[in-house]
Length: 357
Ligand SMILES: Nc1ncnc2c1ncn2[C@@H]1O[C@H](COP(=O)(O)OP(=O)(O)O)[C@@H](O)[C@H]1O
Ligand SMILES: [Mg+2]
Image 1 (cartoon, rainbow, N blue to C red):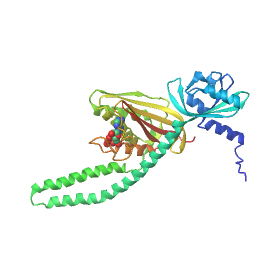
Image 2 (image 1 turned 45 degrees about the horizontal axis):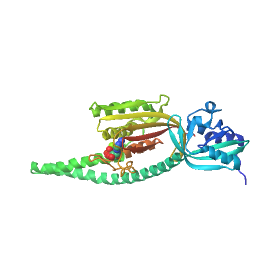
Image 3 (image 1 turned 180 degrees about the horizontal axis):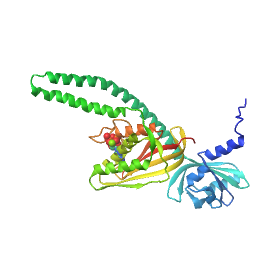
Image 4 (image 1 turned 120 degrees about the vertical axis):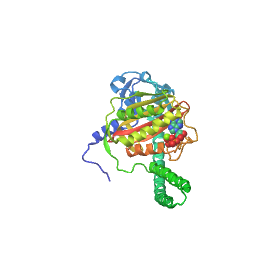
C-alpha cells in the first residue's frame, strides 16, 4: 500500500531533501567545470555555488586520487564509479577524507558525490562516548548517594563522641574522622553535580569565555600563561545555565593551563557550523568552541577514557573535571570531543543553537 502525505508535494520534498542532504553533490561538465553545487558541497568547499560555478573543479579543491582517470572511466563505460577514502585538500589549507562517487548524467555531465568519512567516524565515536558517559555517570551517582547517607551518620557520631571524650588529647582522632568525612562529602557533592534544577538564561558564549579567561590567568599568576582569543562575532546568544557552563569551561581551560605548567599559550576559537549531527540529532546551526594548548598531550593510555569519572593522570587530580564538563554540555544537547598529540591538544565543544535541521 502506498502512503503519501497529501500536504507536501513530491517536488517540494525533493527540494527539501536536496537542500538538507549531508552528501556533497556537484555536477561537472565535459571540461570539468563546475555547473552545480548543493548546499552540503558549498559547506564542504567553503565556497558559494555562485562563486564556484564555471570554475574548474581543481581550482576549488585538490583531490589526491586521480580523478581524471575516474572521469574517463565513467565517460567510456557510462557506469558509476566509486573510490573510497579519497583525500581532499581545500584552498584554505583544510583537509577531508571522503568516499567519492562519479555518476554519469548523460551528455558527458557527471554527478560527483562526496561523503565525508571523518563525519561517519565522528558520529560513531560520539555515540559511544555519550552512551559510555551516561552509563558511568548513572552508576557513580547511585554509588555516591549510597555513600552519602552513612557518611552523615559517621560524622554525626564522631561529633557526639568528641563532646563526650574525657581526655581532650583524644580529640585529635575524632578530628581526623570529621575532617576526612568532610573531604569525602565534598568529593561526593562534586560527583553528584549541582543539586538544583538548571537555570536557563540567554547566554553570550564570549562573555563566559572572558570570565573563564580572567579567572584562569589570575590563578596562574605566573605571567607566563597567555590565552589568545579568536572569536566569531556572528555567534548568537543561546539559552543556557550560565554558572554550569562556566564550570564546564573552567574545567577544560584549567586542564590546559595545568598541562602547560602555567607557562605557554592557550587558544580559544569559536565558530558557527551548519548542519552538524550530534549523537543522533541533526542541527541546523551549531556553535563550535575549540580550546587548544601546546602542552605534552594526553597520554595514550588515558586518551580513550578521559571523559569517564575518576580517570586522572595527575597525582592530586580527582578525575571529575572532564566528566562533569561533558555532563553539563550534554544536558545542553551538545558534546565535547578531544583530539590530542604531543604539542597539540584540542577540546572541541559543540553546542546546538538551532535544533531544527
Ligand atoms: N589539555 C590537556 N592536556 C593534557 N592532558 C589533559 C588535558 N586535559 C585533560 N588531560 C588529562 O585528562 C585527565 C583528566 O582530567 P580531569 O577530568 O579534568 O581530571 P583531573 O584534572 O582532576 O585529573 C587529566 O588528569 C590529564 O591527565
Ligand atoms: Mg581537571
